[in-house]
Image 1 (cartoon, rainbow, N blue to C red):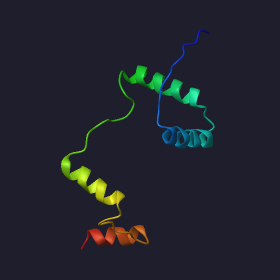
Image 2 (image 1 turned 180 degrees about the vertical axis):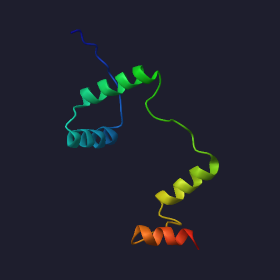
Image 3 (image 1 turned 30 degrees about the vertical axis):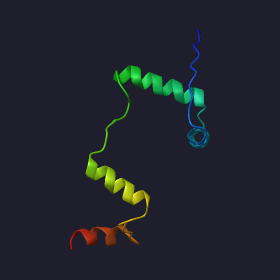
Length: 85
């Protein structure tokens, strides 16, 4: 089997976090890249949706990351009940 080499630069923290996830799944980074490339080939595009959030969604996500206007619930029932109010 012939092999090809891929060289890529990535932020060190992203690499560490991703490799932690892959290790917990029992998948090497090389295997993950191979899976990703096979999925691109099979789907003839990226294997997930890529989109740019609209202005309102981007603002809401930014606020959530800062912990602003975030509601928490003890149970799913409490969450669902809040929707009925």
